[in-house]
Amino acid sequence: MSDTPGADAPQSDEPGLERRLKRLEAILAALEADELELEKALALFEEGVGHVRSAERILAETELRVEELLGDDGRTRPLDGDEAS
Amino acid sequence: MPRDDATLDLFAAPEPSDAPDGAADPPEAASEAGSAPPAEPEPQREVWTVSQVNRAVRNLLEGQLPALWVSGEVANWKRAGSGHRYFTLKDENAQIRAVMWRSDASRLPVDPDDGMEVRVQGSLTLYEARGEYQLVVRQLEAAGAEGLWRIAFEKLRARLDAEGLLAPERKRPIPRFPRTVGVVTSTTGAALRDILSVIRRRAPWTRVLVMGTRVQGEGAALEVAHAVRTLGRSGRVDVLIVGRGGGSIEDLWAFNEEPVARAVAQCPVPVISAVGHEVDVTISDLVADLRAPTPSAAGEAAVVDGAAVQDYLSAVPTRLAAGLTARVASRRRAVDEGLPRLRRAVQRLVEPRRDQAVRLRERMGRALAMAVERRRRRADVGPRLHRAMAVAVDRRRQRLAGLAGRLQALSPLSTLERGYAVPLTRDGRVLRTTEDFTPGRSFVLRVTDGRIDCEAGAVHPDGDDPFTASKESIHE
Image (cartoon, rainbow over all chains, first blue to last red; front, side):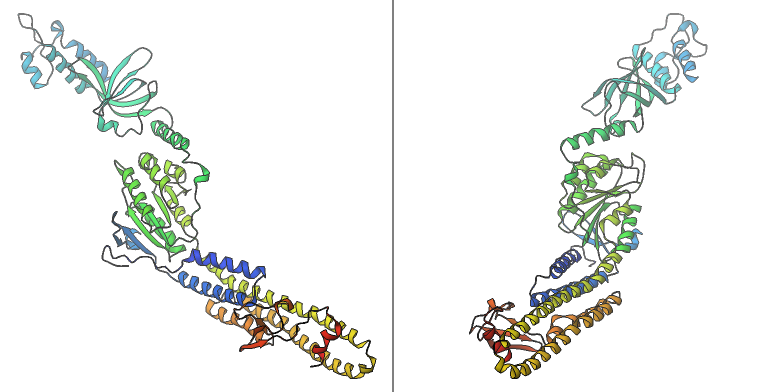
């Protein structure tokens, strides 16, 4: 977050919760279907654990970020959560 | 009633014979001063101009009667190019000309239809150019609950419905885990405070992008519509909340106007509409993908409760491990089934060759003992796995880092450690059956601490000649 209008950082390409949880569901479905080769199963297991860790990291965020969009040109400014509470 | 007095004055004034004494001013002076018309008859007959009469009557009308509420039926409703509305208010026996100036008429949610029963509030005046008296209407209400508002609402709803914009199949699902929630409302209102408070409590990792607008009054609808379009097309939000806190039907009206309805219907991301309290339903609510009864409820609909996600995630490592455990178990079953077949094959070998029986039995006994011992050791794997699983389940609410570390012990690599080996092709595919091998085929044997390049010898599917099949198994 920046105090300078227009300096808003683009969203990261890191997959968000939605994609991670969807992928986790797919991994669980594959593992529980028991039709995988051993090495593939291991790879999925490790990928799944990675998604759980990343998702937990996302959940660990405690500071709500609120910004105000100032106009059509995409400029924003931080909107203090307390300002509206 | 004041009206009676006024009427008496009105008709008494121009009558020279009934006029009271004392008003000696000429008519011109009287009309300029705006006071009661002159009443003192001169020796000669006094003559008024038409304008003087009308001005005098107008002054009487405007000065004597308070603003009135009048009920009647609308007729000849006409909207002039200037924006003023002209109409007639009537009952069975009488009618009054009425006018509603543009500034007042612009507050009407919709123009009334001819024949509609209405109540109007206004003041009487006289249109001097025509000598017609008329009611200048400031407010107009249709009879019945919410009157014109309800009528305007139903008209717009019917039109949008005819276009299919209210169809249930148009409703898009609300994303369960939005990264960014867009909010269109007043930045100073209680609605924003409520929405932020809910999101902060449930999903503080979410980002919120607010576009502030006025939410009531002239032009509010256009501002809201513009903000919905801007945020919706920004590519920055996954879901949009549009709304405001409670208020009168007039306060909420912007959300019943067509520009807002169209902007919501065309929004590229799903829209949650939350206007007023639970009982207030607006056109925006009907067009949106989801109607939330209040702004707080909109916040709850937009983000999932983090605690529920945490619970789900806590169970995942256990499920992942269970998937692997099931796979190991199925492999053990395959071994268990193979062992009796081997034993039968050995017996068939021994029967016809009694002369070698003693020696063979001795060696076979050793081989079997070893096989059985190996099998028992493998069978031990089950309880051990289950104990490990039980530990994992018991502690699943602990932090994930510790959990994942322990789960590593359950991975297939540990299975390899216990003596299993997996034959693989060079590109990593598991070789499962004799059909996967041909004599001379090279393959990789994956054991716990590495890989061994191998080459297949003769291949013996079960069911081949028992002698040759067993020979290599036993005479090793």
